[in-house]
Length: 119
Image (cartoon, rainbow, N blue to C red; front, top):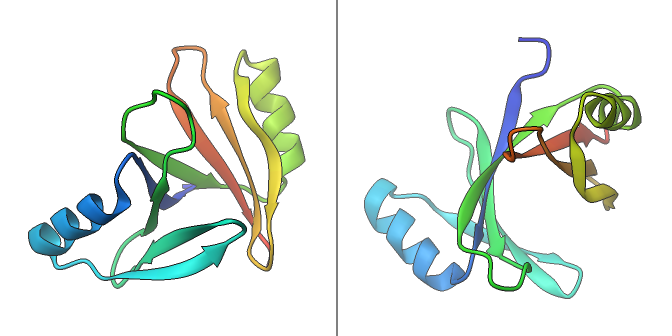
């Protein structure tokens, strides 16, 4: 696959409750890392796609998983998505030391993250 899924992220209304649930269900371990004014909980990749969870910042939004697709050129991918009818939920944003992301809403209303790693 030219642009594989590389990260799954849980945007949740209750991080502690989500951590406890997934730890009990799948034995997932979460490592909290500072993320600006908040905390991001990285889920060990082991075998398979990496993941993480954070507190949802959209007012009134319910908890939901978001998939990220890796690209070589995030600016070009973002522009192409817009030309194809997507809207931007989050502009291209740098994740210090890691890479860049943006979140699009495709023409059917589905959210998708686009990810460009730093190296």
